[in-house]
Image: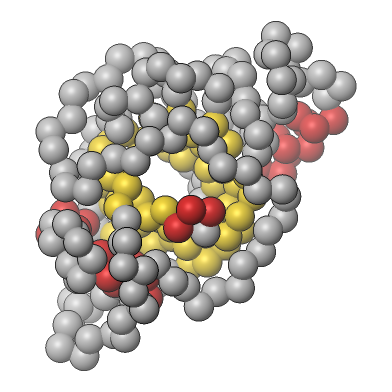
Length: 220
């Protein structure tokens, strides 16, 4: 998928090991086990400053990497990735794209604490379609454009379900610098955390059960 945004790399980019791709077509998901997380009110810049100012923020972890936010789960952090991202909210979920690896996520919000997500790919890497004048959204809603439109309009392989599952976009697409950091777990407790455009922080699981939730709600 191609975007017309400039690519801004703020820190050294490393590929995230162990982040397997999810199926292209939705399938029923098992209910995962493990703790749920309560969003904290700490602003992103405050948490980042606090963690980086600590001489050894993770003394119990072999690599001693600090988290970019206040992490109450005491998980060991892997390397922080900062790259370019795109984000768009929908009636029943979100779409996220990150430049590193060209990864697109469809994050469904079914109202449960275990919200399913799917990672989609477009091997053809075709050009982003222009808006379709025949697609007329209800008042106050939007049709996706650029790369998200390929999946939402079913133009990419195995994406016929995206429009029906997500509904209409509730705002236009936003491009921003995204922070992405995983823990070092390789089992069902493997998780990754990333920022949204309003300093919200999301958590996604990387085990067999793929789900997401908010770690921290928007703070601006």
